[in-house]
Length: 265
Ligand SMILES: [Zn+2]
Image (tube, rainbow, N blue to C red; front, top):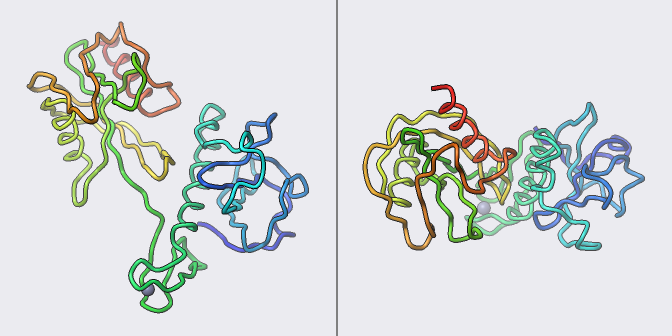
């Protein structure tokens, strides 16, 4: 549930997620969005405020700015809140995704008229043709492929040398999560898998993904990397891994789980 255009007196206290261009305003010495309305560094209009949830029993508000209005060093990606805790990261993810929704749904994609926000659900509605839009969420599969005491790790061509992770890919239209996992692994490294086990999910607001994590077993095929996406991929012993993602990320959690499963055998 999201509430729009609140009165400033109703929103005096709480946490303020001030978002501009996918980034959140944080004071240099704080790792959480600032408290109390009178501490905000910008003038805020009631029409800019939306209620997005609670944190530490206090209300959380989103304020969207079209432009960054102060020092770029104070605008942070939601990723910087990941080590602070899951609840705060989730609110930061919600804030940046809702801000992006507001900014990209001002006009109807079907007839070009100005859209209105619906006041009882998070949706934008075209008053002329009735076209209704909801925030985009792009599901993505992460797959930890296991073969005995080994795990398949790949380095994306976007990542630095020496940094490896499990395979990932977006779900395509009319595809199940399981079909996407099998297809992505085959496309990216040429390997067949089965016995997919769903583990967990994580919102990933860069800009609007929902990560879903699976563990799967190797069936057949030699590693053949897809040239544009995968720079290199190998089987690694679970007790001798290269640099991998932190355990704040779902990828890191799946790799840790694979190690635990191996150790318990
Ligand atoms: Zn329309």
